[in-house]
Length: 211
Length: 211
DNA sequence: GTTGAAATTAGTACGAA
DNA sequence: TTCGTACTAATTTCAAC
Image 1 (cartoon, chains in turn green, brown, red, cyan):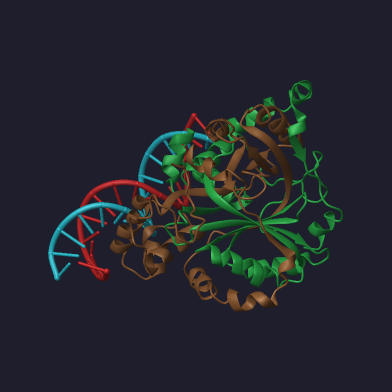
Image 2: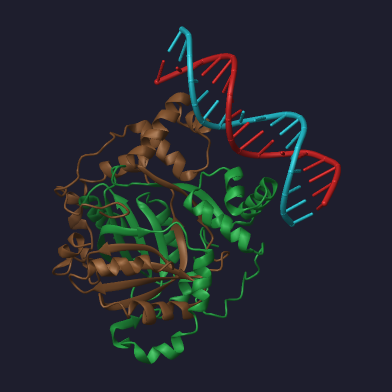
């Protein structure tokens, strides 16, 4: 349904497509990790780094690609060098039942690099890259404002991108697993007052269906 | 200073490093566009798609890499398949003068895939990918809350990633250019009431220095 | 900045463990 | 399934134009 992935927010998972095509073992994960670090590595070198034969590496590589676990290979660009020095986040409140229209309009805006549906005060967050601040203003006031689906926006500039990790996998995953439970006993020790979880606004669920 | 790029938010640019190593022409941009779509394309095929000779393509390819215009090549992973089905955004308010410490702690959290300093109500936005909702809770209450630099957090879940574009370049740029000015005459026609630009909180500038 | 030929490396197929 | 090898095709390098 979506061009990208879809997250189940409930721990139990949602009905629909839970079935996974390919069961990923540790070697698959290791391959993914290497490929995130260096998307242009040769399969031969990949095989060596992962510790499997070349033939096996080709098989698994293709399987991961075919299965969709690897969505695409891409180059990370320095947008400043490329002339798009300004990055902004625009939080959008979408009028209910007009989500489809909103998506269609998004597709016509090449400045938009990323868009996610979120819980919380707003319905979506879009990230845009443009050449100057004026372009952000134009984008928001001329383009977004003219979309009937857009009820309101809130714009924030990105001053600096501190971190973008190309790896989020195997060892990390084990770490996340062993850390999952301790939250219960630790809860009392923590100043909970300083955090805030923001739930979905009313009618948010509808957004995911009529897209 | 930062691992990634740094944006100048003022239109005039900021003092520091404005000088660009490599002047990018249209062919450079076209190369970048192709490489964003397919990071594993051979240089030979790249040359053909861009319409230049192999040798030229190799030269430019290396130049872009050396110059840093291409930061890295990476594989885009389907995080759901990889076992990290939950994505969340955590907006963090950082205690002034403790930015450095915050960054150091970030480096120790593999779940964090992206972090940007922003204007607006909060100081930073981090994106995390974990295996279940409990892990988000753990992350926020156990790890982030225990960092003295963190004054407050606000967490939002990503329900769906609608769009992630691997191209943001040449034709797009021209489009952005021709659209830059019309904003002035169009301003009156637009319901400005429905948008809101959020400026930097007081003392935000300090964050960018002591990092 | 381009073409073409040599050297290297990548991708495929297949039999054996 | 995975590995090892041999075979074929492609890519990269390097030279001369």
